[in-house]
Image 1: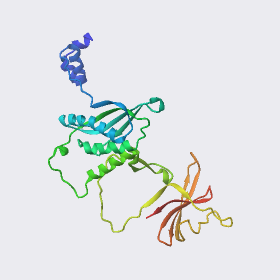
Image 2 (image 1 turned 120 degrees about the horizontal axis):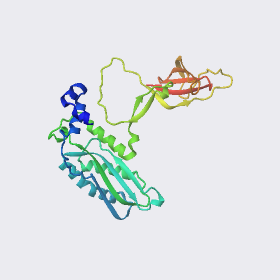
Image 3 (image 1 turned 180 degrees about the vertical axis):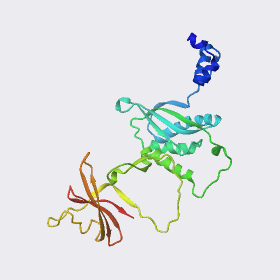
Image 4 (image 1 turned 45 degrees about the vertical axis):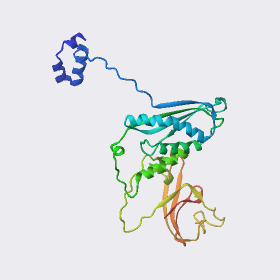
Length: 300
């Protein structure tokens, strides 16, 4: 260390960079800085212990509002908004079930609107099983700085308000949970039902409509392939059910073969698009290994 301190700081910077110079200055005391105390940040949470266990949702909402109002007042004083609310419920008899339960409530956008937040809390509490009653309540807030848009006196209101859509989805999440609002995403998969999945929808993406000369067709896929009626004993394996379970076939195109899956389970499907006399188009396949027809989806 002594030999390192004997080296010139400027030469260290030219040869080894700024990090080496900073280390030299700290070791020699040239870059010494006194400790700067910072005030301890008070956590954004409020708690109340109830005199008796409470099972009535509306009386619980009254207690929640008593805790929420000062939290929002403090956030407003700090020029912050509430981005998420953690509602912790302490139950009266822990031996009969969980001792505590935490519910996370997320508004459509960071807000200080107590009515919007209480509405979401109400939807969440109505869907909970309170058991023997709630003996303690605690609210904790996730804060973010207020955006310039939220501080603006006037805000532009488009004809289709995206904030209204976000508020509607926030109500769905509050009532049914975050897993109730998802979007489809493409995935790498061999079979059609494995080529997509679901992930939580964080924000609604703005629509980007475009003019088209021919209205595109939409292929809708069933969550699980639906088996059709088995073939009669006197018909061949590739016999297409005459009724298809939906109507008389008028035309059929195919087969489009999907095979493989040797790494897990062998698959051999022969896909067909079947147009019924009523105009509907079904997406069917014949499973050669199982010797049966299935409905994968339909085209609209």
